[in-house]
Image (tube, rainbow, N blue to C red):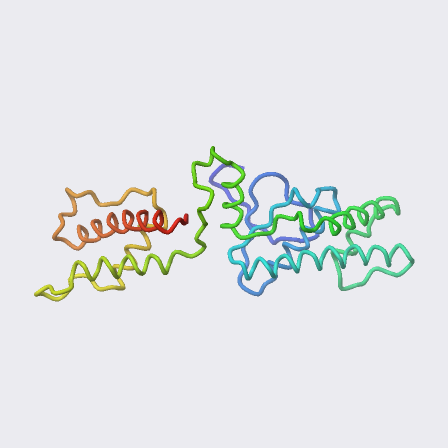
Length: 241
């Protein structure tokens, strides 16, 4: 497959486990993403991947708590289900993951159960965290090579700080001016958000194409000032984004 081609197929949670590489799973809210992640975690563990080698990352602390609970519940239900099947009970018809794990020789199935049991015994070692929490753990593990101070915190949501910066710059620019503001706050916040969402992206257009008196020129100056002020305040507050 060329780099410009994409294979778009329906995802089968009981299909072959994704191999090393990039697999993008797109799904709308409420369609079973957490269920799928928990099921994949159970399958990888049963297949022989130690739980501590799995990295399960989500966006918020609330979602992380739910994800930790759901992954553990899936490991427990799979392990207990395999025990019942080994005792002679039939596999439940509504649990396709358990039916898949129960497929094979008695020795293979028992080995999967033992792996699930070991994962549950060492569940605290599972890396199920937020994106920001994982980044902070990595930076902490790098020590001096990370080039960050030990007491720095990773800020999960910078919107409040960004709003303060925009408001301060907006008031500084337009308070007491004789003419009405040439830039409303909503547009200023939109420009600021674009500037800090990808802080290494070049700011366009260039000054030659956007003199300071034009709307594009004002947007450019605002973007530059927002980036500078955000960095200054983050350093003062001891946070990273």
